[in-house]
Structure formats: structure tokens, C-alpha cells
Length: 325
Image (cartoon, rainbow, N blue to C red):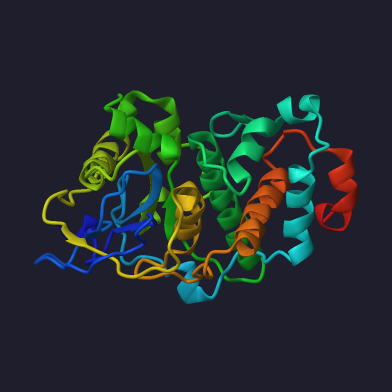
């Protein structure tokens, strides 16, 4: 590797929560790593895959990589309990009309359109629900938006840092899994390039994607190759080889999860993975604490500035002290 485009040894990551919730540590000879789950599962599961690397355009003076928000002490704004419980109880209220549920609760247009009805949102976020690809795409876009706000807020007080991580839509993983032409997809291209990105992807050490599967096929290697294919198609000047990466298995991330909760765990891990461990582990699973996490996601999706979906007056009134901010 030539010095202008070389990257320091840095791991890639996979954090998976299946019914076993067990992982195993295994380091190869290379200092570069890919993180991968230990055991297969026959249930529908979601897996958070994090490749810690740099995708470059034509970076000639790249000297070092930015610190992570975890190292800097940056964090997304914390919600109070009412912000989580009010929208969740409203959503689960049996009095919700069919007309209300059929309206698009999530309607995001940038960089590509995501439209999700109340029926789908409710079906995904209820206790027995399973996350859909569309919902996970919206959540990954939500994490990007929260990172945008977080960095913007700190820049206002003179703390300006380049971005450390980049979230990819689940659509990317689905295209790779299904053998689709992901390089020819506008959605995938817009995930790496465009004016909607408030940072340079080439500065990021962590590239995160989430995939779903009926079984844990060995997709992590395919995703790794696909990321390098995107680098070659959408960027120029990066000569880091896609070969020589070892596999590293994470161990013992509690708690164990039912298969229908793996989507929830995957998006949580994507948001909280530091590159080595979790900054915020979930408590032992119970109906109560998982409802709060689902309620937090619902609140954030409904209130995100880029969401032009249905905002019911009843809910807006209950949350007006926060939504006016």
C-alpha cells in the first residue's frame, strides 16, 4: 500500500443477536479483521455488520482518521421516559382506525424514498413484531440524521471533527445476498455519494450495514467484497487490498434474544458499536424495557425533520413540549 491511501490496522465488525446470543473469539494472522457471528440460526434474524475501513475518492493528504464519537464523549440526545412511552401507547391503542393506520406514518424522500404505512410500523414495533427491510432502512437513515445533528451541535461550540462512521441501508445487504446488480442501483450509489451527505464517506473508519436472513449463511465475506466493489466503482485512488482480512468473533453479548427481536438488537448494536464493544448494552430482555426501546425508535422516526408522514394531532398535542423544540 502506498502511503497516501494506506489505512492503519483496524477491525471490521459483525454483531449478531440470534437465539443463542453466543459469540466466539478467533483472531487470524492479519491485523485487519471482519467480525462474524458464531452459530447459525434457523429463525429469521437480523445481523449488524460493521466494516471498519476507509472508502476513498482521491485523498492525497489523508494523514489520520478521526476519533469516534465514543472517544470524544459525543452522544445522541437522550429521551425522557414519557417521550418513549406516550407514542408507543398511542400506537398500540386498539382504537386506532383503519384509515389512520393505512396512512403513511413514515415518508422520507432524501436520498431515496421510503414510505411506510401505520399498519407496517405497528406490525414491526409491536412486541411480537419482526422488523421489515423498509423499517430498518428508515432507522439506519435516522441514525445518520442523529449523527448529523450531534456533530452540528458540537461544531457550534468549536468542536469540529470529521465523521467516523457511515450507515448503509439494509437494501445494500439484500442486493448482495440476492445477487442483484447493486452497483447499478441508484439507491446504493446515493448511499455513498451525493449532496445529501453532510460529510465525506472517505473519512469514515466504520461502515455499517444490516442484513436479514432465514439462516446465517456466510454472507459477511460477500458483503466485504461488495464494499470493495462499491469503492472501485464510486471512488478512485484507494489501493487497499480486499484480501488478507482475518475473522474475529465477538463473545457473550447479553441478553439472549427471541428471533422476532433480532431486528431491534441489530439496529441497537449498529448505533452503539464502538469498533470493539458496545457502548450501551441492552438490559436483560423484558417486555417493559424492549417496549421503551421500540417507543424511542417510534418517537424519533415520527419527529425526524425529514419525515413528511402522518403526524396525528392527538399525539402532537401530547408531545408538543418536545416537538416544538
